[in-house]
Image (cartoon, rainbow, N blue to C red; front, top):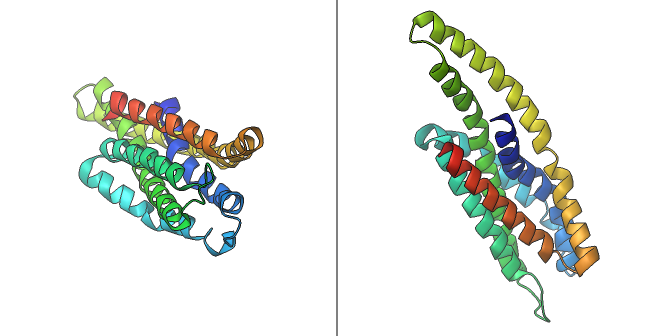
Length: 204
């Protein structure tokens, strides 16, 4: 569960900080006529403001269910970004591109809250299932689960932070090798598909 949640947290928290870091680069390279700094702050703001909504929805609907749909929205958001990039002589549509990215940031923010909410529940459930039915055993299960969840929250946050490296690096490598960011964006979609599959199979 530690490693599975690290993978999912790269998909939510890692996407949030990775897109935050790479958004100005993408605007500058694809829409050079646009002042990237005028818009680069919007995505991180949306993602940060909506994160508590992810925790609130998880309390109401369940963290795994919210995370599952979050990754579907993120995959669709990247697909939308691909549609509005300049390509094959088309100039691209910056406004639609911007809206698609804001949806991505919002979904990453919601997922940030929902994946963080999942971790304590997962380890509490595991420990309670393994413990006996007595009150003392259940209290010990609660203590053990709290320790494990705290460790995994810290560890997955550290691993998730690598998204801040992978996403901008992905853009740069894709542009250097193919002339555009499309290849990196297709890889991101494939990654979100794995996140959907993991969330569905193990948790939701």
